[in-house]
Length: 515
Image (cartoon, rainbow, N blue to C red; front, side):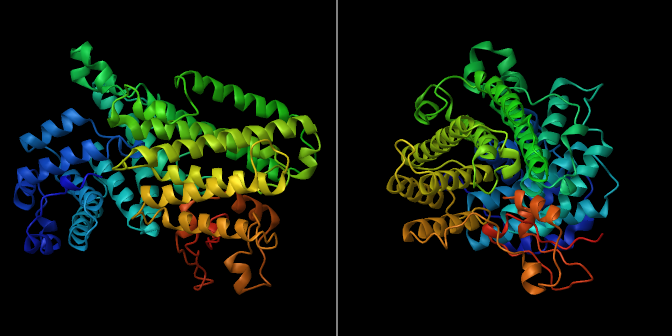
């Protein structure tokens, strides 16, 4: 973030008294009494210049939101939520962090007081609260609020195309739903029992390109190239669906007791889908320089970076199924139907796309003097790329151009990039710690400490006599980066049960959930 665009400092006494004013929320007067028009407008404009390009923050329409703010007609709770999120992102000092907490707190309290009042503005404010709680490390609250937001969305039928509204309003509703789905994935990926908004219940179009969402761009065709993201947001959401389907297939294969002769055909089907997405992404899929240095507006850099990272990660998710010995590979009895030639080809595909992820992130780190905001998924893709590269270098010797020394160098390069790009991220710090652990284990040449297998769950360590079922253990192992692993949920039957906040423990979900 640019340091010269921090939020206006709100009078601290006024902020301290916010909780006393929650009962005053009644129309637009509250906006003027708690935030000046200048403060509100600064936060709204900063949001669109800094955070809106991120796919999970793209659910507000820039022109209409700014216009409503200027006229004093923007929903007060949405203004507060925007101000809180901007405080969190543009200045990490304790003072501004405390201010952000208080603005989010008053918004959340007001929503709970009138929970039955549903509106597009309120669900937008709720999405901002969820993002704030995630990025502040309050994973339990974010996890709970996602379920509330999903229920709101279903009640408002946002999972269906809206009728009777203008094109901007319809697109806003679509983007609310897709942003919610993206946020939910950080908790539920690989765990269908925690998926509160399944793709099977979504009947809306993918988000449109920015030039179609921007009224000014429609009126002035010469400005399309400036404002358009070239459809990157919609393609990102398309890849979300493909990655979820691959994970769903992975779960099924992991539980398959017999062979699965259709495995190669299944892989080819996914590959065809990915080729279709790739054909819409343009050329130079394997290089970051083309994204950073071409004529694409820098405003959409993070979207196109995320699009390419997700595309490469989809290939890694797919072809690691055929990589013998890898944690996420299909069981041996399933791989028995795959020829050695097909396994070798899958290994090369894993390596190719993992190295592409490394190149993209390394190029961004090298060329961006002031790193742009990035989605959490960026760090997840880098982590999986490092795991694949190190695994192949250690256990699949003979691969061209991948010596153990080169693999270790790639891992160290990625670690440095993560530390710079996510230097103050609570979300990413456990991933950084785990990457460091992998590098240390790889450098030590100690194969006894170099493992990709899941460790025993915390429940098993505390109570060895109480074991979870093999099926549950496999399903939990597949939830590699679910933030649910950092949610401390307690069951009345086991008050001590909790989930340790470590990324290497996030490969299984250990929360005690009532039957």
